[in-house]
Image (tube, rainbow, N blue to C red):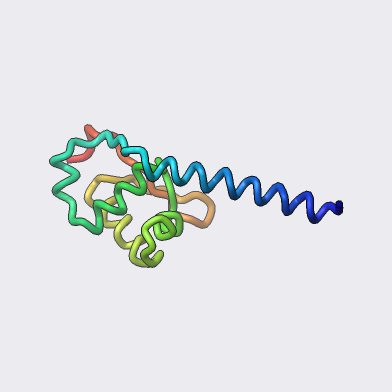
Length: 108
């Protein structure tokens, strides 16, 4: 068995494990540190984006787009809106802008 087959087998095992993790995460309820009334004030499209960031902790627009199925440009716009509203903070990591949750007491 060549090195290619070994590497291919490792990739298949990693993919199987990731599929199981994603399926488990999809079944488990999310724990948000935000009061429900604040979350309900968000429009549906922004709420969906916020929930993805809340699940991941921090991410870039491309990550959010992959999770929501929407374009990266739309997600970038939505993430920036959430940042302007005070729900997310953003910072540059190398060439990408990374978004993360803000503490609950700062959101108003």
